[in-house]
Every structure is written in structure tokens, then in C-alpha cells.
Amino acid sequence: MAMLPSGMLPPQRWNTMPDTSAYYHLAYTIALGIYAAYALSLYLRRKRVRAK
Amino acid sequence: MKISWLSTVAGAAVLGTVIRAVFFTPLEAKQGAAQKIFYIHVPSAWVAFLAFFLVAVASGVYLWIRDPRLDRFAESSAEVGVVFTTVVLITGPLWAKPIWGTFWAWWDVRLVSTLFLWFIYVSYIVLRGAIESPELRARYSAVLGILGALLIPFIHLSVYLFATMHPMPIVGKPSAPSLPHEMLMTLMLSLVSFTLLYFAFVRARYGYAAERDAAAAKMEYDA
Image 1: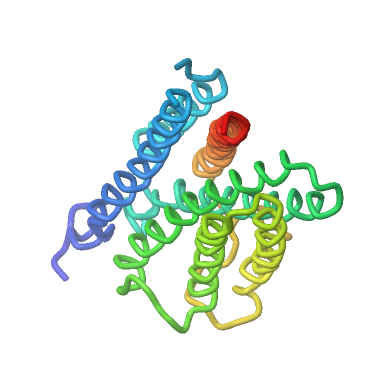
Image 2 (image 1 turned 180 degrees about the vertical axis):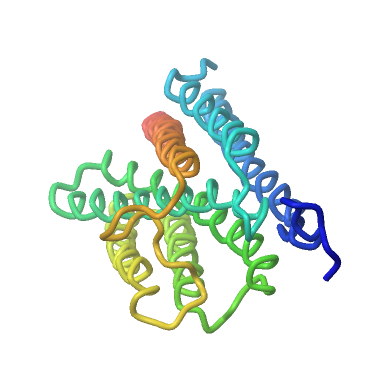
């Protein structure tokens, strides 16, 4: 391995964290979307029963 | 129609939790951003179990004292529990794909038994829609509501009883939680805010059921 200046790590060890952000964004969007849709469905159902 | 104070507080708490999880909680070194799915998946699973446990309690007491308010509460809690379990069953595979390399494993008891729990309470809702007599509907669904909740301890213990890919409990274990402080605080906040969201949903769903039953009774009286 090539010599590095004191205190530096080889580049491949700097970036070992996988990029999993697409799954994270998708999970948050779907979960919050389901809760928002359910809240809206409760609101609309209650509004409809009151209108009867 | 006015939005209740509980719904406002629960909505604000969930929003605050999401902001903290996204912007102010550190990334986990090995899993990266996917680990943050944990802050939605775990509290949703906790609330689903709470919801179905309360269905069983309300159903048991209903069979004893036959108060229609308990049946209405069980109906509301079961529906909200199904919503939270749906989120669990979607967010879990979205975490599993980058970490395990697969969305789902049919041999994994924790995963399959959670799906089975979802089916039981979906069938609970279907059963309620299929029976016309209110007394019969309440009685049959109370029995199913109690039987379904028997799965909850089995699901919780399945990671100890069977070979499973699902992670062991990190917080709800006999020894101290093995999470860094910032992550533990975000998890605790998410547990509180999602529990508040559960109560807000059940309150709104119960209010709807009460108004629906009152309207049906009035129509019957007028006829």
C-alpha cells in the first residue's frame, strides 16, 4: 500500500457507508402518506355522516 | 368541522419526530440512511400491538357487560391497528432490501406471523361488514378480536423461539438498551408521538362510529 501522510486513512476506508437513502425516502413517504390518507378518510367519513 | 386538540398535538408530535429523525439524528455507520426507517417501523409495530391488545380487552369486557360503546371502541381500535400494521409491513421490507438483500423471507416466523396478524384483523373488519344484526356482529367480532390478539406474545417472542433474520429487540430487552443516546431519544420520542397518533385516530374513528350508529337508529325510528 502506498505511504500516506501521517494521520490519513486510505480513501476506500473513508466511504464504507452504503447509500441506502432511496429506501429510506420511500419508506418515510409511504408511511406518512398512509397516515395522512387515513386521517383524511376519517375526516371525510365523519363529514358525510353528519351531512345525512 | 373542528379538528380536536388531541389530533393537533399528535400531528405536531409526529411532525417533530420526523424532523428530529431526518435532520438531527446521526446516521448509523454500517446501514446508512436505511437505519432511520427504524424510527417509523418500530413505533408503528408497538402501536399495532397496543391497538390489538386493547381490541381484545374491550372485546372481553363487552362479552361480559354487553355495552355497545366497548364494541365501538374495539371496532375503532382494530381499524387503526390495521393501518399501523400496514405501515409495519411496508417499511420492514423497505429496510430489509438494502440490509438483507431481499424484501421478504417466507421462512422467517416474525415476518409471516405479522402478516398473519394483519390478515386476522382485516378479516375482523370484513366480518363486521358481513353481519347485519348489531348484537350478533359485536359478539362474533369480539371472539375474533380476542383470538387474534393471542398472536401478539407469539410474534414478540418469535425472535427468541425460532431461527429468524429479524433483529433481536434493541430496547425492549432485559438488559440496558444498546443504542447511542441521540438515537434512543429519537426512538422514545417516536414511541410517544405515534402512541398519541393512535389515540387521536381512535378518538376520531370512535366519534364517527357513534354518529353513524345514531344516524342509523334515527333512520330506523323514522321508518
